Length: 160
Image (tube, rainbow, N blue to C red; front, side):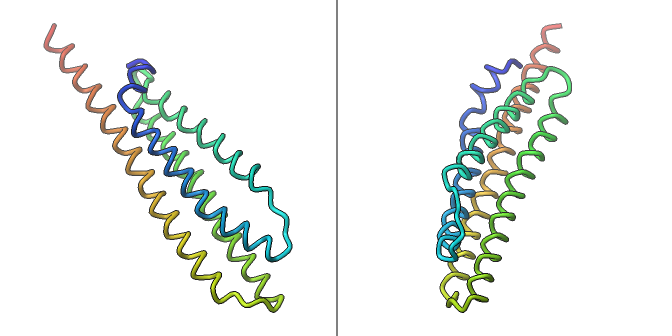
């Protein structure tokens, strides 16, 4: 399958993967940056979100390219999917732990953090749900590519 065929077949799933990864990141960046501002720490929200968006976009394109490789596409698609999910999962866990560290620093400084912890956990739960949706969208894209390739192989066998 060519890249154009893979893109036509799975564009919706890959866009959903990108959107879910982006939303999951934003769900954790916003409260963490608010907590950091309250603690007097500077954060560059534009750079943080922009860099993540760029890397996630590149990884989604790599995922689509790996689905168009002629013979060894399966293991390459799965490996790229693991790389993508690993990166996004690492970023989310890193962001969540950073939020906990900022809350701890605020608590040690004598600031009441009673409302911050449930807020961070709520946003973390939403980010976890988006991460799960992202993985499910990648799985659906894999299934669509597999189905299309199986159909092409069956048609090729029937014509011979």
